[in-house]
Image (cartoon, rainbow, N blue to C red; front, side, top):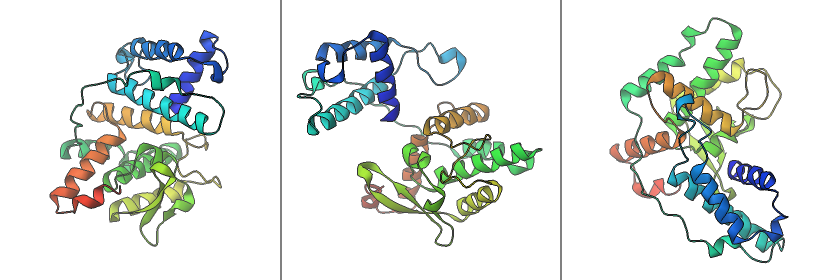
Length: 251
């Protein structure tokens, strides 16, 4: 949601649009056309000129509509201009999983034995903890990026996440992800509440985690690596191991 609103705000300011209460459906339609034509802002250099995918445009539409619904409910605007705009359609594609060889290649990149300096050691332990958390749990990107140190319960081997609808839930950790988190916390020397930090000791934004995974994937030969691929991998593995399908709906 935050990224979608930032992109929308930047475009509105560049176009000199009026205040939000005076925006029309035509303004929103112009913006959606812009999204289909603008270059992507993540990925390899040679892909930055590739237009945004139809699914990304649809996601931005949904988030904007949710935002304007919120404005209407609180009386900031009188109507939702997106109600006059047809919901964009896109061809749904099967989300690929992360295969065993790909996982091994990723884990080799975050192996602590490669660390030579304190900065490299910190980065490797942090990245290893992130990768193992994605392997062991169905955590979403926003949930991962929003973790705080107090959300990690090493004694209970669980992490607390804030999911959709502001709903908190606990996720159990596997033995390896538990050890990876413990190792990271030993090298993470900060009083900040944010769990994930950059090498400058500042909080690591959710968008930065997205880029981090993209770069790890490129180095490991795993194209378009993102958290949803890990979620899909977790779900498939869970079902193959006999896990009840009804529990997946709660994750």
